[in-house]
Image 1 (tube, helix red, strand yellow):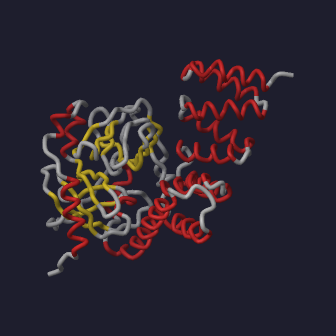
Image 2 (cartoon, helix red, strand yellow):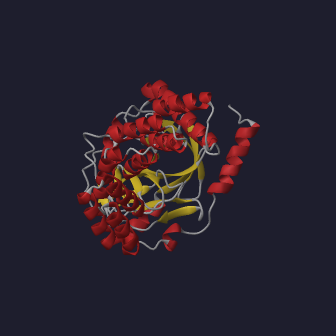
Length: 372
């Protein structure tokens, strides 16, 4: 018998306290019944580094994000019944930010899974484990969703304004009929990134322990990159050279789009623009229409006064999310500095629709910029 170390035992005791909740999530759900039913298929997940969500996808199996489990072999989950259980991570070689975990005590084989491409609905709802309420919750529905070509771009995400919060990664994303569209990868309260459910067929087919070594190596890089980003949060400028090298190495080796974005943003904060641009371009290779990556790259170019490079990035961003006030503000400045009349006209027209309160100041800036 393998006994738990005192530290590991304390971790599980703390996790039990964190994941415990009383009451019915379905009873408090305000969405339609098809969506609310999924609150009984969402689990809370606790690792030594984070609290996240997972989705019961088949008897004994939970689906969550690859970046959640990192290189841990087991995680702790709270089932819809409130039972706390260990779950064992199943390695795979699919280049997608998803992973299957097997609930402790189940020995059934992975089933085959044929996923039909769902309809491209603009109205998506995240159902995930809410840390504040300590129970599953259905969040506010999206008004738009942009879908990728998953066959050509396996790491590209669905991008939507479905509401989601930290700790929701791994939650279910549903259309109005309750059909599973994808699994949440990231959300900042305004825009969410969603892994399309089409990847589930490959994940079921290619999840087994023959991939364990490479899977753990990548997982260690994911954890190391995330740890270094956390350690770097308090460093405002002039980071140590060894930290910069370690961060660059671990984050590149993670092969994770979300971590590419976060590393690019951090290097941009340090005014290390070449590294910031490199990481954000790596992210855009995986997901060319990612609003988060495009905005981060636009800000990088703006800070580095490379507005000729910034202009096409902002134009691509506005094609996706034309109401974002930061994008409209940056585009106003770029149009004025470059004396780009078509961009100026486009931005003013968008402001008139989406941000009329800012329109007078933007118009004054443009008029002054184009004055003889």
